[in-house]
Image (tube, rainbow, N blue to C red):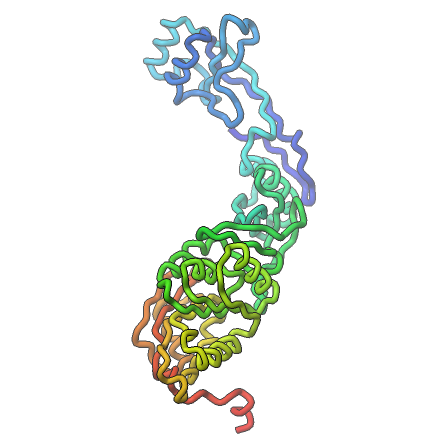
Length: 406
C-alpha cells in the first residue's frame, strides 16, 4: 500500500499533512485471551504495516473483544485458505471493517518520494552514503528541482542523520574533495566514522572519504607484515596509514591537502598510534624519504601505497633512478600498490601497460586486483608489483627544466 499521490512543485518544502490517507481494512472480532493464537495462525494475511498493530481494541466493546486487522489485499474471507475459513467459523469470529488513519510517519522514504515527485520521473533516488551524521546523495539532473524536498524527507526519515548534502561536481583534482551543497539539516561537516577498529575524524567538505572503500582498506592492510615499512604517498586522513600503524608497521604518511594532513595528525592522536606525517607534493615526499633512508636504512620502504586512482600511475616516474648511486643500489626494492581507473576491455592488462610506459621497463612480477565498479564501463583497480631494478637502478631521467634546455 502506498500514500495517495501528492505531487509537489519544484522548490516546494515538506508538508507532512499532505500524506494522510484513510483506509478501510477487513477485521475479525476475536476474544482477548486468544490473540496470540490468532496472530500466529493468521500471520501471512495480517495488516503488517510499519508502526501499526495487527490487533487493536474493539471500539464497540473494548472489554470483551479485540479486532484482528487483515491485509488491505483481503476483501473477503473467501480469499483465505480453507483452514483459516474453518477457524473463523468454528471460533465464531465476526467479520467487520476497521478504518485506519495512515499518515506521513507510516510511509517509507521511497513511498513518500514516489507520491510527491513527478509520476514520469524514471527513477527515485533514496540511496545515500553515510559518513558519520552526514548523508551524501548523488541526485540526477531531473531531480534537482526537488532537491530540498528530497533532502528534508531523507533527514526526517533517518534519525541518525543530521546533515544531508548533494554532490555538485567531480573530485577536486588537487586536494581531492567533493564540492557539495547542503540540502537539509545542520551545516556541520566535521564528523567521525569508524573503520578497521579505528576512529577517523574529518571535515567532509574539505577532505576525501569514501565508505565504500573500507573492504579495500582492510584487504591491503592485511597484506602487510607488522615489520613492514610503509610509505603512503596520498594518505588522506589515514584510512591505510592509521590501521597499518595500528598493525605495528613503521608508517610514513603524506598528503598535499593541508586539511587532510591536519586530520591525519589528529587521527594518529585519536587512535594512539605512531606514524610520521608529511604535507608535501607526492614526488617530493618520495625523494625526501629516500634521502632520509640513505642516512637511516631502516626507513627504506617495503611497501609503497599510491591511492590516487585518477592519476597515481603518472607519479610512478619518481621511482626511475630513485635507487641509483652507491648509497642506494643495495637498498631492498619495495612492493608498490598503485591504484587507477580503467575503461579498457582488459583492465588488468591496461594497468600494467600504462605503468610500464611510465617506468620505461617491463614489470615482470605483479598482481592486479579489481577494487570496485565506479561507473558503467569504469573500474577501480590496484596494481601491486615489485619495483623493477631496471627502473630503480637506472640513471635518473633529466628534470623537465634540463630536458627543455637540451
